[in-house]
Image 1 (cartoon, one colour):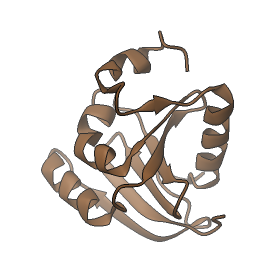
Image 2 (cartoon, helix red, strand yellow; image 1 turned 90 degrees about the vertical axis):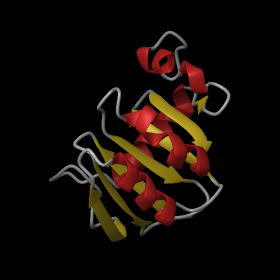
Image 3 (spheres, one colour; image 1 turned 90 degrees about the horizontal axis):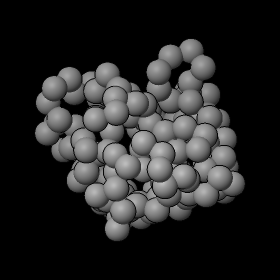
Image 4 (tube, one colour; image 1 turned 45 degrees about the vertical axis):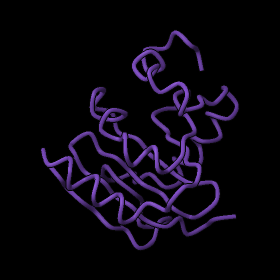
Length: 138
């Protein structure tokens, strides 16, 4: 990731907690996320993700945080994918506690997944989450 990219600069205060992926790693992450991104609506693809849960939290970000705390697997590394060259690693605990500052300022959609479990999460810029389990997971 280019250190001068606007998203790197926007999140520079978290540089101790996130690790931006290099071009090859970001492309792999983007391709994997694309397998689970719906082609018909904003959200997860029911053909590649099971047990999808959805929360529309509007302006109540506290309810979004509580919902995530109850569902996001504890203390594992997750990959956050904004685009094909904008991806980083962080802990799931860090993500749950800081998602508002990571996602809300830019108002971009993001896909979040774990390399260790089939967990996958979609953040929609319209203040919605979708969470599920990837059907194909190695």
